[in-house]
Structure formats: structure tokens, C-alpha cells
Image 1 (cartoon, rainbow, N blue to C red):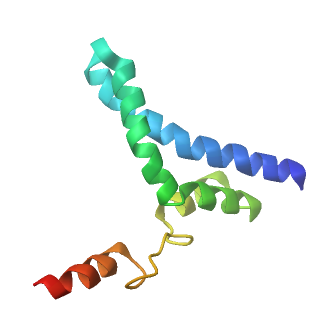
Image 2: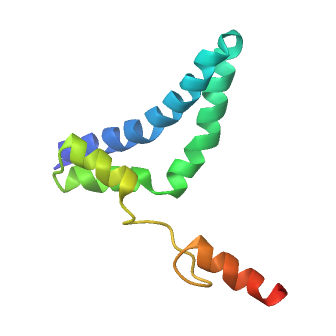
Image 3: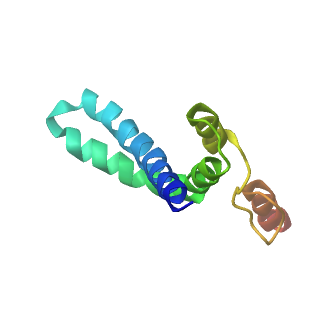
Length: 105
């Protein structure tokens, strides 16, 4: 069980950080003179969004539930399970937005 949890931690870490670095590297290829600035800069910007979307949590749970790698990737990036919810005006930021601004119009 401990080995499976370690595997889940490794998959969750790599599945969250590698796409951020890849997104930065794709832009960095265009601007070769400052490749690392683009790569690390865009990775630093996109990483908090990956965390707020709970991608790492879905990767972790997917490994523990025994999903294959392809199933786990689909689950982590497309599922809304463990999606962040607001507690003020409903279950999404859209409801929060309209709940907050509807009295001002």
C-alpha cells in the first residue's frame, strides 16, 4: 500500500508540473534567445491554476483507484470531481459572479 501511495504521489507531481513546463517550453522555442525565461515564467503562471483546478488530487485518486495511465490522464484533466466550489452563491465561479454583481445593475 505504501508503494502505491508513493507511485500516486510521483504521478500526481509529474502530471501537474510537466504540462506547465511543456506549455512554457513551446513558447520558449519561438523565442530562443530567452528560452528559460519563457519556460519558467509560463510554468510559474500556469502552476497555480493547475493546483486550483485540483488536477493533482484527481491524479492521486486515479492511481489509488487503479486506473490505467490513459484513463488517469483523461480523468485528471477532464473530470469535475474534486472541482473547487464556492460557498457563497452556488457551486461555480459563474454563480458567484452573477450573485455578487446582480444587485449593481
